[in-house]
Each structure stands twice: as C-alpha cells, then as structure tokens.
Image (cartoon, rainbow, N blue to C red; front, side, top):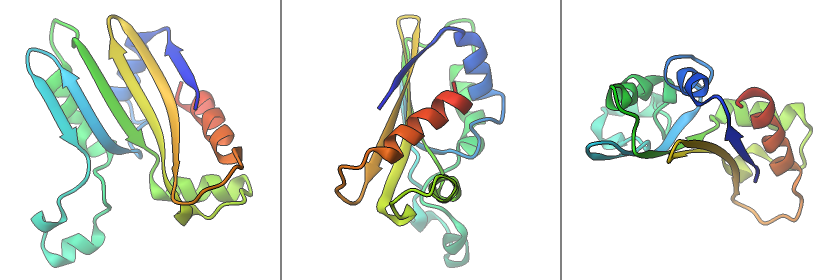
Length: 154
C-alpha cells in the first residue's frame, strides 16, 4: 500500500472526470458529500437485466460508464465537502499485469487491485490497495501495483 498526495488537484480531477485514463477501471464504491450525501455501490444488480444481458455483464459498472453521472453530481461553483472514490482494476488488466510481470500468483486468486481516491479539506490523496483470495507472504504483486499506479495514474 502506498499513498500519493496529489499536488495539482484540478488537473487530476479533470483527468478523472473528463479524460479517459481511468475509464477501464470498475467503480467499486463512491461516497460524495456536497449539499447532500451520495453513495453509489458499483456492484451491478444482475437481476435488473434479462438472462442474455446478464451473461454479458461484468460484476461492476465501469468508471467510464458511470463517470458522467458522477460529474453531474460534482460540478458547480462549490467544491465537494469530501469524497471517497474506490476504483478497481478490471479483470483483463489484472490478467495482463500478472502475465507481463511473470507473477507467482494466478489472476483468479486476486480479488482486486484498488485505487482509493480521497478528497477532503482541500487535499487529494490516492492510496493503493490489493486484496487476495489466498494467503501469501510474497509482496511482489503489491509492489508492482504500487509502481503501476505511480507510473500511469498519478
């Protein structure tokens, strides 16, 4: 786990809400505090879809799909009081990361690779996180994820 304090908040938020850099991530969770409190769980309700659609759907909504809705909630003259956005690397990118780095772990043993983006009191911080379905003392995946976020998403 690594923390990154974002210096250029405006530019980072522009990339997050208007650019496409984060679009392939899944939305895991959003908590947004403006004039109202908003909570969005990114886990799709599969029962909403018919059987054919269910087979095509992932478990989570992509950030690229939900981003315009979040942008509408945030935009305005005033900054949010705070927000906590948890993005999760998608399955295809997890597989690619494991293969490119010859990691000693199977992609299916990875629950998620996360970016926790916190904003409060004029400070924006990004924290990395990993979650595994297995127990291991090997921290290689964690270090590679930290480096990947630092290199491409900060």
